[in-house]
Amino acid sequence: MWVEGDVDAALPVLRGPMELDGYALRPARVTPAGEGVLSVVIHEGRNRQVRRMCAAAGLRVRRLQRVREGELCLGALPVGAWRHLTGEELCLLRK
Image (cartoon, rainbow, N blue to C red; front, side, top):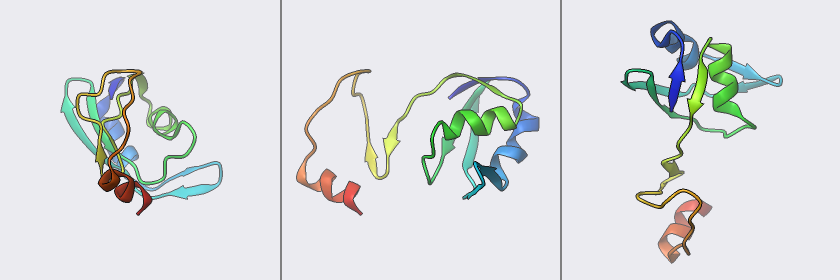
């Protein structure tokens, strides 16, 4: 994801315990991936979770890009495109 703000100051907040709507979130795995770019792995997928976490840490999200859903990697699938899942991929999502 591409963000604006002090990434170094936000990292401990993003990696630490957080609460959204009275629900304690599992800690996210957040890794800097360049100037103003973060790689984030979340475990719940609450409503607008990543944007709300960033706002709590003082960051503004400029752009989000999902690259994986569970064990299913999206690869080079263009924005707005879709494809049928293989049987193996369906099994991965049902875990």
